[in-house]
Length: 315
Image (cartoon, rainbow, N blue to C red):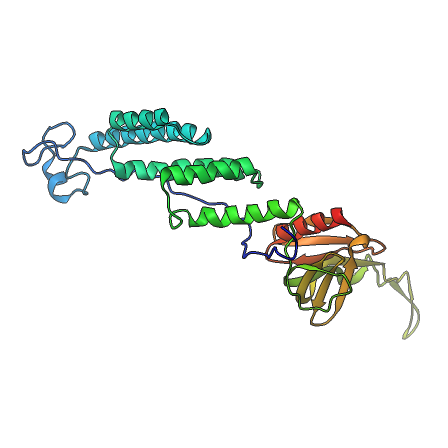
């Protein structure tokens, strides 16, 4: 795919996906005698039957806790077996038969199996993107798992957003750069690949003063006449910090990095860029011949850094 055909998708910065792991247990009715524990069959305390929680009205506390523990263990056993089968790639008939037999052995309902399937997909996803790199093999494995488990896009929406972003990064690293219509005038043979809102930050002097000064000592020479000795201002002390200078648009092209701000605009030719550092919410650019680096606070500094690296390798 050529660069002119590749457009930049709507990506979001990296955010780990959290999933709640809980066991919502529904105790089946086993005993018809009113007031009986539906786990062991013994009589329930009268106060539990009338004033207790929903679980206390159908089972003793220890019976309920033990049943929940057994169900969690069954979840984990099925989850591990399913994850192992999916990690191999396309599942075969023997894998499906083995999982069906395990489901029946553990007494899992289809609703419970559906929950465990999502957990197993999460495990595969977390392992694949732990290094924040999605290989083609990992991408294929996750696609096969989605198809095998019959999971729809609505269930996997947070995962699909992350996967789209990682695929986009992989394509950039492979040399397939996006093209955009920039907000600046381009030079001859210049192609714009990225733009976003940005804040320009730079190291500046934030405080200046004198330290260690003295008023000296006054010596009386005559009535109303004094002579002061030993007075001095001390040494000049300055404090520096990284402060916001301007805000505007950051544009990355195949020739330069351009900041188009409200107060000032400037560019860094790719050939003059000697180093860059990626932070959680910003990217630092070091230009040859300039003592102070430029900091740009952007929404997704990782995407900007990947693009700069790919362009630098081409130039």
